[in-house]
View (cartoon, rainbow, N blue to C red):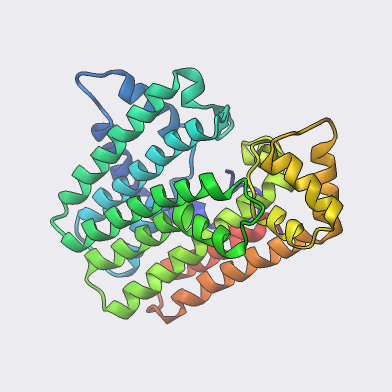
Length: 333
């Protein structure tokens, strides 16, 4: 998903500030995604890792550690760990969703096959655990292994919830906390942990990552119905075609008449989609103000992220992270 629509780009300012460390992360990623025995592993991984992603999650770890005054080397290990976990989940997601496009390029499962994508994803998870063990911190291992389990749990929950009209906003939030926010919050939290800052600051970093991750996913779901393919790297209406009950649809279903509910039941639950159904879905989302309500929710979570780090000591990176929370939702302003 792209972060290129706003005029100012805080993630670029952050990347510039952390340039040296990010270079180290990239070197470590390339080193650890190598495989002597299975050349397909670096081929598949490189296709995704070098596809122009923003490295947002590893940047969160580096930023949190930097802001907390950490001067060791393990922030690089943890940033690479976070990127490996993220890449592994993307490889698995694309198989589950039968996706054909990721970051504007064909997906790995399309270029190779599902087996390669799943197994390379497994390899990256294993590499991630090797990296986090090297930090020697049991707490870091606890946080990142819990996040990995939560991500998998969120994905499995989504399988049953995504096509069930009984799915409400609470269940949606549980899915999002799992599949997206868990890694954001772990990424920022471990930065504070390795820096050894007081517990209140670690909690603030966790809250920031959690709220930012939720805002990020809500925006992603919103842009699926009103974004541009070129900017998002996805086709408009992909979630509808894949029968995903995301927040805009959940809001429209909650306000639906009997006839409208029958439409959602046919298209989402039963998967009986016909010519003109996407246009009808967009009409119903508009009719009930579902897209605007979703936008307001995203803005609310971004504000929570911003508020979470106001308690942290003044630091240029704190200001960049604050700007980033605004920027994540700027694309739907």
